[in-house]
Amino acid sequence: METEKIKKMIANYAINYILNNDYIGIGSGSTINFLIDELKKISYSIKGAVASSRATAKKLYKNGINVIELNQVYHLPLYIDSADEINENGIMIKGGKGALTREKIIASVSEKIICIAEESKLVKYLGNTCPLPIEVIPMASSSISRKLIKLGGNPNLRLKNGKPFITDNFCFIVDVTGLKIINPIYLEKTINQIPGVVTVGLFAIRKADICLLGLRNNVKKLL
Ligand code: 5RP
Image (cartoon, rainbow, N blue to C red; front, side):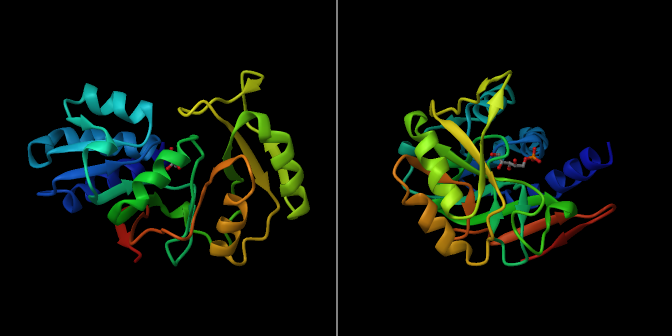
C-alpha cells in the first residue's frame, strides 16, 4: 500500500516534466500505469505517445491518449519509464515486466530519459535485489544459458503458469542472477553479442538522464 502511494506520488510529480511536449515515449509496469492515469488529465498538451508494450498501449488507448507507432516519428524528445533497479549514475536494470526490448528501442531514440522509481530501487550494486532479465530467441535459450554460466551467472528461464513467459515479441526471458556488474557497459555489450540474445535489460549505454526518486513524503531529483 505504502509503495503504491509512493508510485502515485512520483507519477503525479513527473507530469510537470511532460507539459508542452510533443510525442513522448511511455514505459511499462505499475508505476507507469499510475503515470498514464495522470497523463489522461493533461492529454491535451501532448500530441501522442509511443508505447513500450501492448499493455501500455492498451491503457493509453483506454485513457484517450493518441498512440502512434515508433516508425511514425523520427525521434522522441522524452521517454518516461520506471526500473527494477537504478544506481546513482542512472544505470538501470529493467525488464521485470518483460518489456525490455521495446523499452530499450524507445530509449535509444529519445533525447531525454526520465526514470521514476521509489527509493527502494536505488542501489549501490546493480543486480543485488533483482535478477537481470535477458530477452532471447526461444531456440537459443539453452545455448545462451550455458554462455551465461560461463560468465559466472545463474540463468533461469522465466515461467508463467508453468510454461515459458512469452514477450510481446514472441520471445522468452532468461533471468540471470549472480553476475558481478562491475563494468555495466562492457557487460551490456558482451551479453548483447551472444547469438540469440534480443536484448539484455541492462541500461548502461543509454541510461537515465533524470531520476525522480519517490521517498515517503516527497520526491527527490537524483540526476
Ligand atoms: C518493465 C520494467 C519496469 O519499469 C520495471 O519492472 C518496474 O516495474 P514497476 O513500475 O511495476 O515496479 O522494466 O519491463
